[in-house]
Length: 246
Image (cartoon, rainbow, N blue to C red; front, top):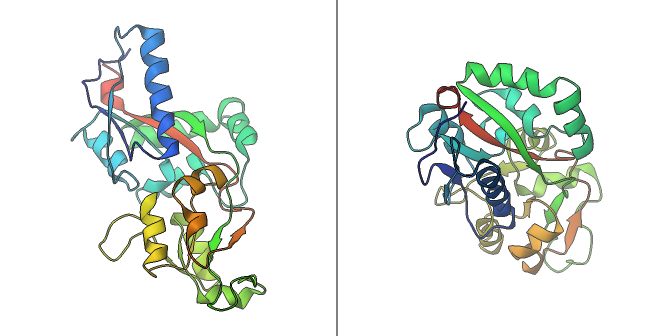
């Protein structure tokens, strides 16, 4: 059983990002198959959604009863959430779905989510991601900036969570915020590059990266592959468990 979700209950981020199509598909699919009876989803866009805001809001029902997000953004709350989204050198999209639906993965994750007062539903996957954009030294922009391991030490990189910890161990300075304390996502990544706040960043892949203009940043000519930290990235709908059980 489910409840009727009030308008503007379904949180997501910047509606102009390409990945914003995901929650729209979910909304349209659910509302079509239910006819809006007994279970209905509407949503609003929330600019700074790439934090644990969605998790916290849905769990506490402070602003919304369900939300669309990537669970690893809330890994500070529970490291196991990484397995719901992506882990370094982990599964590709097909393998992730096989594990979730045929290998007991979804059942195990839901045991964890239940303790947090949530139930989650996988809802989309980016597929394999890229390894990011790295700015070369001035005057030698055509020379690959990474030729040996020690070269990583000169980079300040936008990269999230578990992947960031790995890169830090290799000598990279990592960040997920700009000087104003805003999350480095979408267009804010490009601005941070242009402002000199970072000199490396990973986002998603060619389609989404081009949409925010990363290929136009001066001096950033080198785009590395693969993104071993996200061989696939699963998004999900998180629903407050008490509301779901009504």
